[in-house]
Structures are given as C-alpha cells and as structure tokens.
Length: 337
Ligand code: CP
Ligand code: NVA
Image (cartoon, rainbow, N blue to C red; front, side):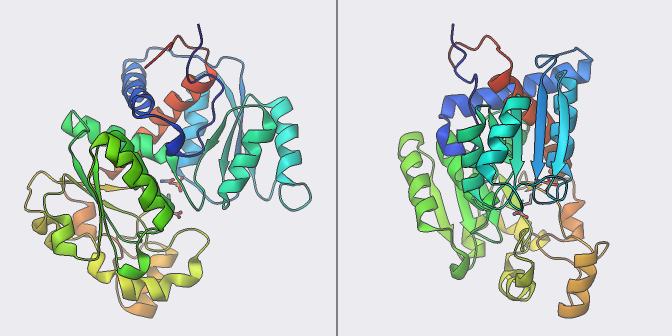
C-alpha cells in the first residue's frame, strides 16, 4: 500500500494539504514523546542525508543532524565553501551527483528555484531548510508549538509583527491559511507581503475558514492574539538594510506594551530565532552604536517573560524535521491521512 508521503519533497507548504500538514505536526509530537521516553525510532537505518547550506544556520543544521542520527541515518554537512555548487558546478549537475549517493537532501539557500532544481534532478526527497521565499520546516515546528500550548489549531489567531515580506512571514501566512489558523501580518505598508502570497493565502483561507489580515495598525492588529510572532528585521542576504528597517520597524517591536495591547493574558510569544533582544551579538552592538537602540524586534524583558516559547520552538525544529524525513523516506505505513 502506498505511503502518501513516500518520496515527496517539502519545498513549500502549498504543496501539502491541511490533513498532511496536520499529520506531520502530530507525528512530530509523537516522535518527541518517543525521544523523551528513550524509545528508539530508527526508521532511516543505513540512509545517507546531504545537508546543503549556502547560508548560516544553528537550529536547522543541528536539527537535521540530530534527527538524522536518531533515525539511524548518516548526515553529511556540505557548506557553500566546501562544495562546487554554483561556483564551478550547476545546481542541476550537483543534484544529479548527490542523488546518486544520498537518499535525501536538505537545502538552505537564497533561491527557491534552486530547491526546485535539486528536487527535479536528484530523484530523492529535497527538504527546504529556508530560502528567500519560504521556511517550511520551521512551520511544522511553529504550528506544533501552538498545538502543544492550546491543544488545537483551528480558530487560533497568530499575529506576526515585523518585516512582512520575508520567508517566515510568507510561510506563516500560507500555512495558517491552510490549517485554519487566523493570521495577521502587522507591518508598515512598504513591507506588506507580496500580492501573490496574500492571494495564495486567501485562496486557502476560503476552504479552511481562516481569517487573513494585513495591517500597519499595531493596536488593531494585535488585539486578541493567541500568539505574537517576531522575526529579525533584516534577513540573511539583506544586511545592507539595517538603517531602513530600524527606522521603519521600531513601532512594531514586541514589548510589554504590545503584549498588553493584545488584551489577552494568555498570549504566547514566538520567535524562530536567532533574535536581537540585547547587545550581546556583533549586529546588536553595531545597531546600538549606529542607531542608539539596544533591542530590535523583541525586548529582552519580553524575550525572558513567562509567555515566551521560542526555545520550545527551537527544540521542536528537531522533532518536526525528524517527522518530515521519516514520513518521506522511511517506508512507513501511512496509507492515508
Ligand atoms: N530558525 C532557524 O532557521 O534558525 P537557524 O537559522 O539557526 O537555522
Ligand atoms: N527571516 C530570517 C529567518 C531566520 C531563521 C532570515 O531569513 O534570515
């Protein structure tokens, strides 16, 4: 009997149905329990996984490495300075080579098109570990964290505040729309999400009943939020934009005032990390000396508050990536969802 996930890539959330995404979230919760109880789950014994990274990573790299190892597979890190991809060898040729050696490929890079070329020419599942457009593995962890906190997803309201055009904002919008989670993007008009992303989300929302809202009004946007979600103001690859973003996004910082404006004392705080909540980083120091602020997208107080769940999210990256790899590569018995 055919496993509906077997052999599939996860390039963008839009390629998966609500039930399939829900299955991956629930499977991740199950794998988390197995890990905590010390029950082995070596569904990928003897497999080899390539980890292609054109951008830096702590969580995604660590999560794929530990998840692959727990599943009995061998993960191999191939950083941009280690291999020929892009410089001396095309993505297509790289895909053909890696597909003959590896059973699955993780790709983190700039162009979504590269993830698609890898999937087309490697013949093995490709998992998007973040591109400029989408961050789908992050979504399974994020919505898993929401489900752990509220026991359900449908009807919840997630409010993302900050750069409304980045990969995480895009992915939250589309995934929430598929799952039936209301998503509000609170961002200045010049950073409103791309129309094609909003249209895609609205299309899914028609079926799921989710409410999609894009606004530059903080007070109105955050009211009744079950979760407030922040990401960096400047994503990887756009480091020349600090000045513009610091000027634009200060009113969109997650802080105690914004938490109070939710008018909901059970709101949780989410952040995909890394976060600029103090000046203990090089960029944090640079922003303080150039622009005079010591916290960016989230204050240190909010980051350390009892409502904050960002380290659960970070842990859940590992369990959810494990679920994604096992479902698509593990010959598991999943005839339907
Ligand atoms: N959230 C996330 O993707 O973190 P890394 O960039 O450290 O992988
Ligand atoms: N939007 C951020 C996400 C980091 C996990 C970036 O692309 O840098």
